[in-house]
Image (cartoon, rainbow, N blue to C red; front, side, top):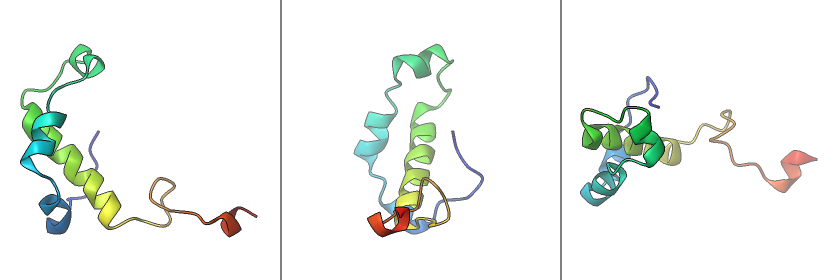
Length: 73
């Protein structure tokens, strides 16, 4: 699943050829869902978006924010 936001150059720079190659090997459930015409391109997009969320985390996003124990009180 990809988002509409284009990953930053910094996030894309963190994606290596090795990462793309290993992520392009589809999991059985991905193969059952029809796979991809270009698994390498799909892997690159997924990895770049993941890196974008790591490099530029959104504190308001439930998946991007890192709470401290004091925040839960």
